[in-house]
Length: 319
Image (cartoon, rainbow, N blue to C red; front, side):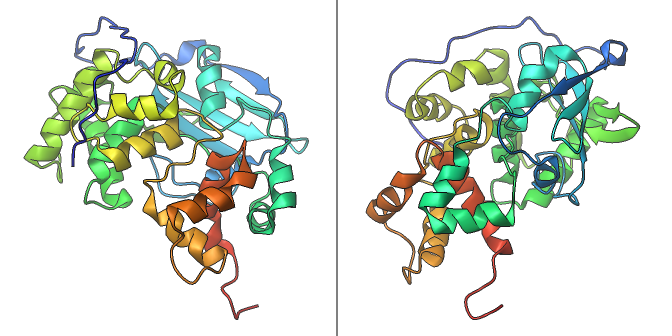
């Protein structure tokens, strides 16, 4: 259900001039190879196991291909990442996308002190040991995250990805990234009046149009939202059609790059904390606050480890 936010500061508007072109151009001519050296432990193979917005979880490996709309201009672009044995990443793509790529795979921060959380909290320590070097990856942008929330409402992630793939196929944003076809969510100008695809019912279609228009109006600028306090960013997001408290939490946690924001509206976290910390029931808000206090300044990462890595841990009574 759509949320209603109280009056307050709005996201600074940056209105890019954009019309819907007859064809979209993916400029591979500016592609080059550059390197990124992680600050702290990082495993690209663990990132590849995550379900990105454009695909189901893949097998762990030293390479990853991504396609997304470029921050600011909404141009479709793609990158190919490969990790060397020494941890360094080789990135093939446009250097203009470097900051966005670093945010997506969590390389925009120094994660050295994240290990200290596991030393203080044995539960987080077990999760870190089960997924060494995992930095919870971000969805490609606030725009992509908001669209994914619309597509996943009362639908599975797989169904949402199929709708997204169909939208990309109609718009021509299935990109050749280092020899592989990778779907890119069409720019917002294409979704203000999207072509019909299976599963895109009238309500979902109208909300998708509203999110696309908001993006064109500058209300889904990732950097501007990230600069706001998380709760204020959520209030701004909840003014958009189809974005309620649960969806706004997903956008903030999974696209803005925060490391220390705990979203209390994601009830799955309370259930998993209750299981991992042997409470015998879902954790209350007060218990979650107490248990998560030692995770700071990495509460976002800790909660995403709990949600994504806990299925790998042995169940009680098994070896």
